[in-house]
Amino acid sequence: MNTESWKLLAEFVAQRAELGEREWYFDPIPYLTRSSDTRAVLVEEAGDACGCEVASHGPAPAGVGADTLDELMGTVGRCLRCPLGSTRRNFVFGSGNHRAEVMFVGEAPGADEDAQGLPFVGRAGQLLTRMIESIKLRREDVYITNVLKCRPPGNRDPLQAEIEKCEPILLRQIEIIRPKIICALGRISGKTLLRTEASLTALRWKVHNYHGVKLVVTYHPAALLRNQQWKRPAWEDLKFLRREYDGVEIR
Ligand code: URA
Image (cartoon, rainbow, N blue to C red; front, side, top):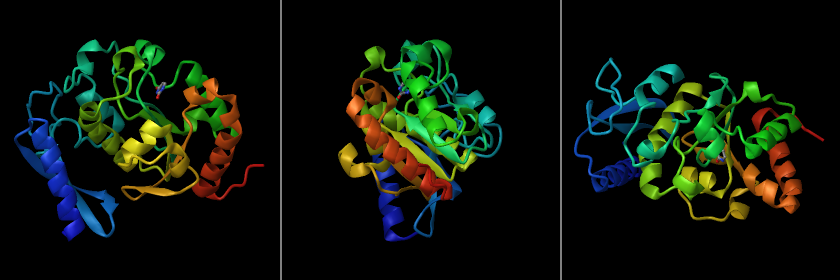
């Protein structure tokens, strides 16, 4: 591994240690790479305190070693690794095409999503469907999920510790789906995935790299419902997304 990879690894171990986890196994992930190096991902030991079931093969446990989305959902769907596990009604894993080339990542489930166990089914979700259709894609062709899989009480912003517990599930979803492009919905999703404190304005209109996958950032549909003046720039972002995805120009 090069210096950058060792640094990433050291940061990751330090974060895990802060969270009180003591033992890890290494599971090389060939797809999610930074530069030319294969990135090692640390997965927790089977049977830890998280309450997640353990994949039956190899040392990769706690769902992050799953090979399909169904298998992953089966192993993480009863997760209790953070307190949101005991306040949620449903674990909101994600929905859509398991071979999607375009993936949308929101922040966390809201009340409607928590009630139904599906992402983006409330008013913001209806707008998201229209946004997807506006660039001539269909909701059933893309994959939709969130950074957090459980609803924060009162729809508060996700806490850093919750994000750190939950993000490995998102990473594994991305590895399994292998989308060509990811669209982060809103600043929280964008800044979480890109590990930055940059503003939404600074993140928009750029093609970022998320572990080797193209990533663009746009407004969260809930924000668009509140602020009509952002609809025009959001439309420009969506056209940008489509162009970056497959070169199609939407007018
Ligand atoms: N907002 C989100 O970020 N995600 C959902 O699933 C619903 C609303």
